[in-house]
Length: 315
Image (cartoon, rainbow, N blue to C red; front, side, top):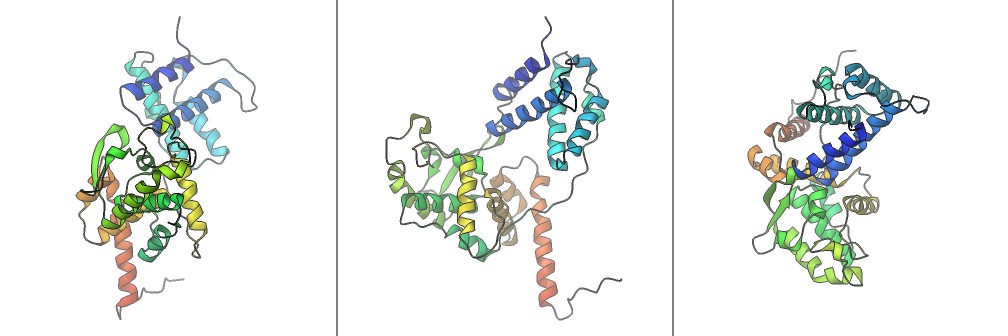
């Protein structure tokens, strides 16, 4: 009996998990995107059921119809492009498995993306944010340690909450990170981050006020119930401290990663070193920070040089 599309999606997700070592974040996104595509194939725009098409009937027109519906619903180009990438990868898997003759998604062009430079904080703003938590409490010590590590290492939110006690070497000031694709890397951190983490670890046992959950294992960062902190909870914590500052800033954990890279580049660090610390597969991903740096240089020049004012634009 031929497998259904839902069964093929399950097989593909298992392949990503066990053979490609995909992260939980990637698995959740691919599962969500592919099940949304499945729902589109098996329901009319009005929501009525319709027969599931055979795999060979999923052609480039079918995929374009799905992307068109996403556009009508107001989806951003970036999220539409992500869903198309998931479908492309899934159909490639089906092609390799011999379930379809070819990958029809290759005929569908990705939506043109708006070029967006990464957001980053000025030195005084990031200092205010990192020093915002009240370190007289165990939760405040934890929050300070997390913010110091995010800015001090540039690691991702998922990498931070995934840290175990054995991953942090306070003496050598190094942290072992499990990045995308289960790739391990070592990232240094500075004295301020080291002091904040050491201060928190002394209070870690107080945080839960009860026995640590078995599911927490050796997790460095805990929630108030004794479990491992999640990336979503980390985002809420960052928002809480941002909201208490007088400055109006749009900040999320990834902003501190961008800020780390931008400040390192502006201070003279080479791109290869930054690439290694960020865990980027390709140097081109890291090079977006050069645009930020150049923009900063232009602003400084125009404000400081006697003849550096920008010419008025013609009307």
